[in-house]
Image (cartoon, rainbow, N blue to C red; front, side, top):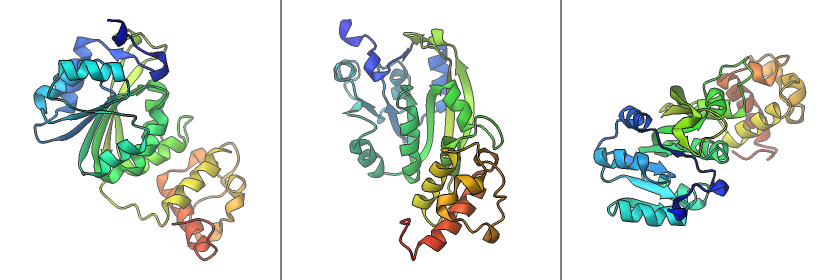
Length: 264
């Protein structure tokens, strides 16, 4: 059916491998009382499996033609037509807590969506996402490795992450030029003690925009008082972990509150 052809502008690569679909559904292990939301259900291949376990699940799809198809195929599916990068998605998540998110994410929105999900983490129990393997590797990377990045720090601040499955391009239609990996993000319930999330994010941007410099040089604009913290200013931004970034951000936030440079 022409209207169901994958659309390049939406970055659509539909998962077609029946064995992979079954394995993913088993890993997600949805329950009838779950607050389950599938992002970008596409043609409904995974949706079919999830609905059996969780009839009250919701789905959000941006493609109007696919929405018409999904409504016909699954008349009782709670389907929202909209963009996950819009305010509508944020409002949907904040209406309730304990969400479980599922999605075969288009590669072109995976990073901005992950950043948005970090900001909404208090509403999320866990998430299962198919991502480009290169992005997945950044989420499980460790400090001191090439893959450790601003995204790594943001996600690991809020979630525990593991890669559960890697799929070849042949599992999708049309086949992408890269492999994909299923990542499981589990929300961290503990407060990490951040004084200002705004300060934390600004520190990350400043550091990783100059990741080959030392921290002292990369963060010169913030006037960090290195004598007040335990972080070594001669290390590079990709050599320190989440706790170290929290320490830097808290020190900057504390001395910036009175000056009004960074809002809490």
